[in-house]
Length: 114
Length: 116
Image 1 (cartoon, helix red, strand yellow):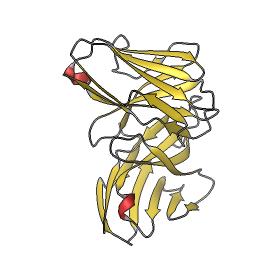
Image 2 (cartoon, one colour):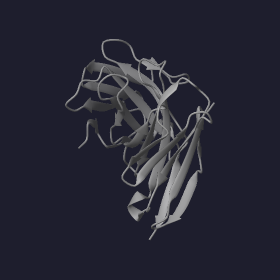
Image 3 (cartoon, one colour):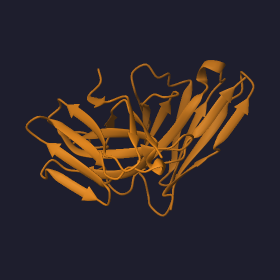
């Protein structure tokens, strides 16, 4: 069973537009929500992360919005650029896991057209 | 710069060969490392959790005798795919939290394994 549900599976955005990727979860024990960016043939790289005690976190063009009551969080990429074309994964960590295990969404393949 | 180094980046070998993949934490100690497998255009699938000084914890459905994990030191974990077959071909990635389990996980650049 997928513990973190991610949508859309793929996304095409024009350069300068806003890319929005959504994730949802059910497990209330999740206490940390990172987003990873992965280019072909590379490992995922941590992009931005949020904890449930804040509703929004912004780093440059990347913003996470977090809705604790709805158990949803989303990644917004402002002024999307062709270099942002990659696969994005949302994830969640179970605070009950002493080892810090992450649960990943299925991923969103983003293509930004010039 | 990279905080987790994975080697080799690519392996091509014949069926029946055993292949060892190394995962090193750079400039920090990792008592825990995670090993993932990723098929094309799919998400990361956790295979096992590597624990320094103790046995690895495998996810359900992952063969322990097929995928041997050794966490030899606080900076090195190895995954050995024993007697590899074409169906073992995949992208293998390791990760480690930089610090305790509350710290973000950093990933290696992965190993592309191709079994002929």
